Length: 214
Image: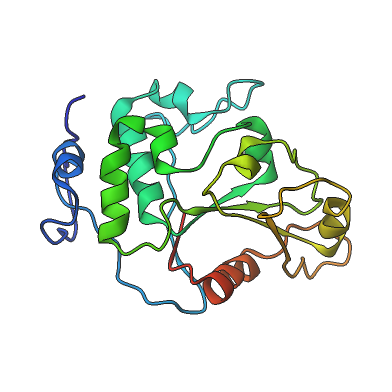
């Protein structure tokens, strides 16, 4: 795999922010704004797009970013790096369904850098080896057998509505999976709202100490 070439960096990062191997392939340093626990975490996102702006083919079995990037190794390495930088990875129930059994942990997307991701998280003083997975669902209609809920060491929180929690009480979830209710939409005609993004982020910051969410 060839190192990434940085064409422009508005604010160069401080040196030595990455383990040596990651720094080589990333093409330099990497940093995020320093932030203590507050009312909401710092939010980052990643996606890949074509030159003409397409991020998904939106066709059955062809919605993943791998088809856009050609399963580019550098892209996967950066995806792993962003996961390693986060305290929590947020995903919707549709992503859980479409990418069934995909683990949102650094080493799953780029296993060759597993040791380097672990070292980076230790360097960043992350409390757990992997970022916790936060599944956002309004209805609670998810597959409780998905690998996300059955991976030792992976903390999982389901953020849902009162209706979603009622549905989930009828499902068999592993004991370690937490189900939390967040405020729904202010619109009365939308009882299955997933809950406001602000409410989900506030929950993660205040109850789980999340500083960076992906």
